[in-house]
Structures are given as C-alpha cells and as structure tokens.
Image (cartoon, rainbow, N blue to C red):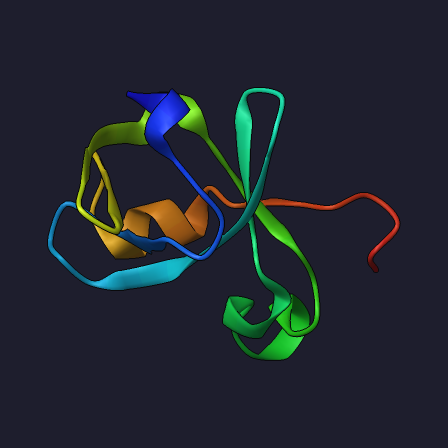
Length: 82
C-alpha cells in the first residue's frame, strides 16, 4: 500500500480533512510540500508523517488513520529548517 504513494497526492485525515500534499517518500516517512506547512512556527518548513499512519491509498489521495487535527499535532519537522 505505501508503495502506491506518489508525489503530488493529497494527504487527508480519517475525517477527510486536507493535511498536506506529498512531496516525496524518504525512508519510512512521507515528506509534505512546504506550501502545506501551515502558519506561525510551522510556516515554510517541510513536515513529515510516518507511513505507519497511512490507512489506505484511494485514487490520488492518501488517507491517514488519524483525524487531520491529530496528524498535524504529530508532524515531524525537517531538521535544520528552523
């Protein structure tokens, strides 16, 4: 399933809310594009989501097992982006 994830796919939470857009896969993490990085301290940073959170890949969307608000709370930021 994780092998089906491609660049530019939309990442959505279990609740269907937009979380980000796939930039690329790096190891066991999905790197999201900077344009979806949010505001404040998150703005302009790449964020990563563990592939372990992926519930399914459907069409051009990657659905997570967690709701969007929870997924955003557990983003990993790229080291050196601060």
